[in-house]
Amino acid sequence: MKSDRILSLLGLSARSRNLVSGEFSTEKAVKAGKAELVIVSSDASDNTKKLFSDKCRFYGIPFYLYGTKAELGRAIGKEIRSSVAVMDKGLAETIIKRLENS
Figure 1 (tube, helix red, strand yellow):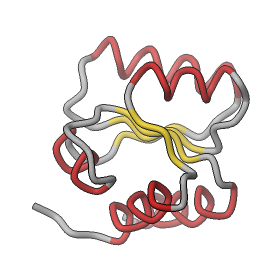
Figure 2 (figure 1 turned 180 degrees about the vertical axis):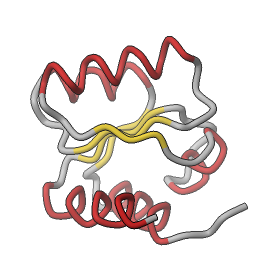
Figure 3 (figure 1 turned 90 degrees about the vertical axis):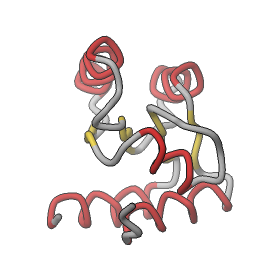
Figure 4 (figure 1 turned 135 degrees about the vertical axis):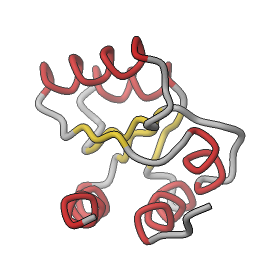
């Protein structure tokens, strides 16, 4: 299990109520223009990856594949999660910087 800064920041986002998780909520946040960043687990289904990469491209939202469903879920204190959306711009920018450098 990797305990890293990106997962810690996702946990922080979740605790500060600036994160939604699960496909339905993530998609809703994207369509509503509330998502600043979408992360999909690298072990998510191809359909899920394609759905979010297409949606994020359409809405101009940064999209990354990162971690596993179990790691994403554990980071935010939930069961397994294949997708999360960060809604705080500052947190999203910090996480993106870390993703770019990892």
